[in-house]
Image (cartoon, rainbow, N blue to C red; front, side):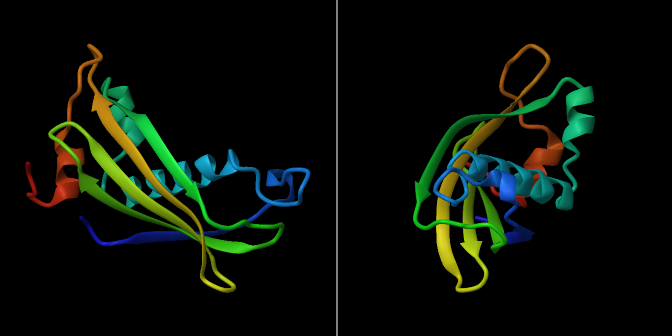
Length: 135
């Protein structure tokens, strides 16, 4: 597993449900944004890959909700990546409320990359995330 990457953000009012907490579906957006920032920070240009016909796709998401965020809460989204198989990438992620370090969401998002023919393909840019680790 690689080191932990982190971004921070703040809850916006329109992300809340009728109970005044972040809607459960919004966490998927937080997690996706953090994954994209992680990839960018590690030299993986998702837009450039897509232009080459290589698309990163999510094939499974597991989210465990542990606590709630409310309007104005500042939070961090942590990302670490691991190799699950020759073609599957695991993004282990956490959403943590910064005021008290409360774990709000713990997630495993599994993805892969597909080439122009729709076949799994791990490009050299994605391979580099694993620093020589192979299965």
